[in-house]
Image (cartoon, rainbow, N blue to C red; front, side):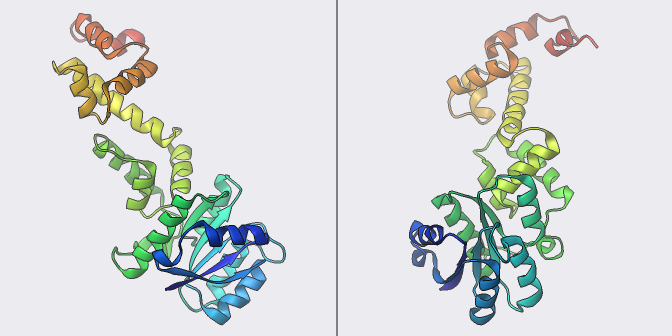
Length: 261
């Protein structure tokens, strides 16, 4: 069993985390609790936990300070999970820079916690190789977010989600979503939708595929949802778009007519 330390200045939150999931079924056990970072650091040095789940704002020593001190003073591997009520990019960014394995928002979602623990178990068991850059640079380098973008553009036809891509790139879903939006100015789902609709427009213009066939080819599960999303972005149905494209003069597309420049 992998040993877990719970760190929060609210005893009821610690109790809630104890009861949230079946820890032993996942291969973990709650080894101890602490009400602040200083107590946690002392417990860590005495008991060497595998995982520490900690709040950020606590008296005496906060969660991020605990992570920094543990990196200097604890000569054993430990995986940190931050559990915070602050949905702020700067907290997530600072946590990842400090080497935190995951960043969960309160109230903690059961599935998110299980996902985080399974990621730790997978990495520690050696089932998947640990990324080299996680050791040298806890914050993903700029190139990784472009790798994520390229992956979406190559796999948009498949059933993909922010969570599945975060797991693939060894990143926290919350942090990845915020980093993606800050880099590209779009939410993950917005970007995925734009990529799918762009491909659908190409198929509508260049093939005789039926609308439901195009919906399937670009990653939509149902034709009705595809039509609704297409109309929301293009202000016309797929059939109307195809008709207008084919009526346009040779060499001039609907996009040209919308933007003469």
